[in-house]
Length: 111
Image: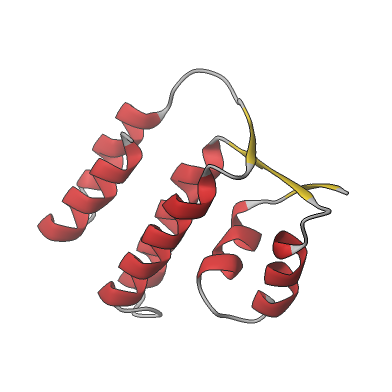
């Protein structure tokens, strides 16, 4: 089955929360082809940062989720959304984070 996942579903795959078991089951099913928007990469990072800022997760959990995301991201099919947004969004994110987290987030966007 071909499935399109938005960022909120992807977060559930990499960070345990309500709905995680269902999302993991669907994504792990080899009969499913998972599609995501290229924007999902940026949105995922922003979602993690928001959870970190709101103290919903700690820095270690954020790093684990980000590492897991980049290990798995290449296996998802992606849909282009237009011109590259990476550099302008890096500048926006850079103003809202502590230096160690900012460096990690910005470097992950330019991969």
